[in-house]
Amino acid sequence: MLISRKIEIDYGHTLPNSFSFCNQLHGHRGVIVATVEGPVIERHGDAEEGMVMDFKFLRQIMDEHIHDLLDHGFAVWKEDKEDLEFILRRNSRVLVTDEPPTAEYLAKWAFRQISGKLPEGVRLKNLRWYETPNNWADYDDE
Figure (cartoon, rainbow, N blue to C red):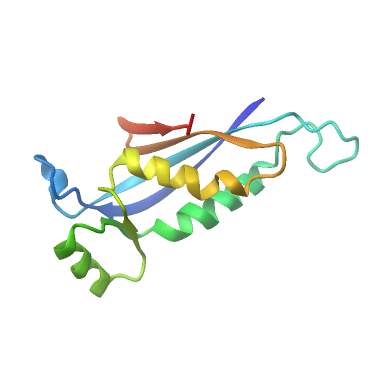
């Protein structure tokens, strides 16, 4: 069975090599959707009976390992020295990335942030990172 949970964050980034306006410091209202797969719990009387896992716990994992690290912060590529120096001077919430912080990279990063934190028998199937309502990247590590 598959279930999904969505969270939203406000974050900034820049893509210094881009030919578009994305080479400027700018922000997004990101939407992150995690889809997990697992069996429906059938233990009679269990608080999660009839569920793959409680949505509340999935949200807690996503909040702790994605939202709380990047919401109202900046994702900056470590090779973008000028912007990185500026942002580190002014912000306490900075995700320094190994690659340009594209939607594709952030989907992979977020997937890896939560994939090992799920209950036994539940696995992260897909992570979708919406950079805008019309643009997103999917990562599934397969």
